Length: 392
Image 1 (tube, rainbow, N blue to C red):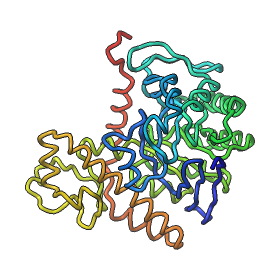
Image 2 (image 1 turned 45 degrees about the vertical axis):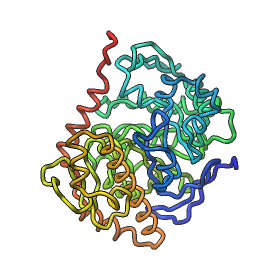
Image 3 (image 1 turned 90 degrees about the vertical axis):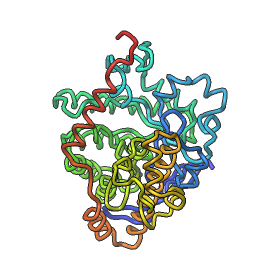
Image 4 (image 1 turned 60 degrees about the horizontal axis):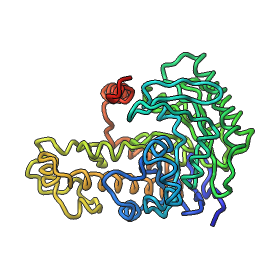
């Protein structure tokens, strides 16, 4: 199977569909676990599949730097390299250049950047971004884009919109593999008019799907939803819409409400390794002393492997003693929660009761404090932009 198609089973603001790729038919709305370096941290591909995932994400930037395109080419692509036979999406690396590279220089030709690993200099052009992703062999590949900081001036963001559109056209021209679907990325910061301009320019080039980038990088959640809604309204009804880098349960529920079909984020797996576990009432910190000796599972009625076999007190013990099993069991729980959430969302859409589902979920789920979340996010971005001991 080499064809790529999107069958929208339910129209309206909240959508349910089937995204057909060479490796899997993916039910949407869907959440993609992030395996930037050809692994979803702590889990095997079979475990990811057993959790119900049909589509995962890997990253062009990370795989290009390590192990390198030549190594992966010898394996015949990322699927064979990592032992994953489901669908795969690779990001172009544009966001990673923005968030990880301590030094970078943008031009209309491409971006020159320093590796966050050793400070070595590299160059990505739209053509090279496609070349590497064709070597990696993902089902869905992303056009190279310029992702400016959310606080950048309107002039800088307007320039990024223009460059991103030009790069998308060059990516489409450079693409040679018929078994890969190329998605461009809508930019425009928090400016609704620039988002519309970006989307309309990309629609004219007729891509099989469209991504919304440059959000969830420091703005408020309400701003994210507002700009997503304004952008989604412009995008074609019959093409998949992908909101990049969004993975909080409450954000996904609100994103689906404004017409988003695909989400990805390292958040569920990253916070799991820090002991933050998802429940229907919100995140809990399993390392908190209140869970010492707790005999119940993390969440009663959860049917994940972790909750079926272990108590919250045991998981608490593993985190307090820094046992490696803690990270695996926590990751299993969070990814199970996310897949169950997506299944419930899809069912609610198909039964035409999504408004009630969303209202109930958002009233029951207590999100992380907004001020704390924004502070943590900005510190995380700042830390990622620091040189990694290579003298830059």
